[in-house]
Image (cartoon, rainbow, N blue to C red; front, side, top):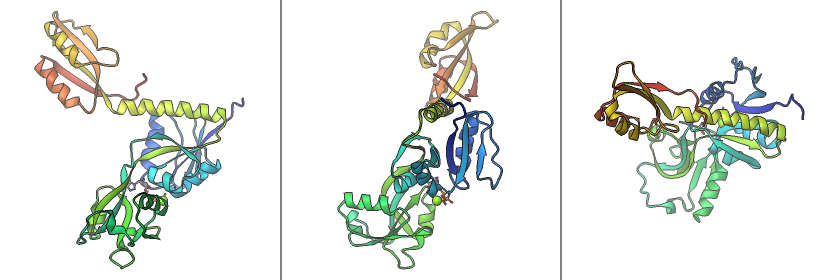
Length: 288
Ligand code: ATP
Ligand code: MG
């Protein structure tokens, strides 16, 4: 086993994936310099090297082994990716790939697209979707500004990335079908060496610890001892809450972890159960 093996990670150089991809790496405790215009960088404290590329190129580079892993949208991974593994969803750059048509058109279902022409940058995903739904249509592949195609007479509809829908609206289009829900994912080469796999496992362990922490809050509160039982029932914690006596007799401090999602609900119940002096602290990392 060589101890100088390095894992190569391809990330988008500039665009909607870049900032969150870099923050995730930084929050995982990996230090590196990412000066503007740099195409390659090596981490200072972890065996990983970064390649900064256009997102469309990342699946091919990963399939060929030029990079071992990459961060891309599932939309790009599915469109371009042959022979790559989808390793981990990352929870950012959420969007969907949808079919849209002129807003004044009457839409009664998929039949609208029978023998229609559809402009898209995602011909493969679109063709698979149409085939599954027994629709024969003419796909116009264009690489950008897809949403203007109907207004210039190039197509009857588009298949494009949507997040808020405002770009569609401002081009006189309405969304009629969602083909795919997408978010950023880690993709991987299928023939990675065991040494590289072991670096990847360490990286994923760190990423999962950061992700887990993001969905939780650390909570500290004071309560009179007679209310402890009912308060503890509201706070499951990682194993069970920590209870520490206060200097003030008859009172305790309770520490626990709560889910971000039911946070306000829990706070309200805690107050009703007699909790006071409630402190809420973000969690940087959470190891189970
Ligand atoms: P590149 O120059 O690297 O080819 P690009 O212009 O193709 O970049 P971006 O617009 O930066 O790509 O989008 C990158 C990815 O981010 C998309 O493939 C998609 O997964 C996701 N994405 C696109 N639009 C949005 C959006 N409005 N909100 C959130 N995520 C989005
Ligand atoms: Mg691109």
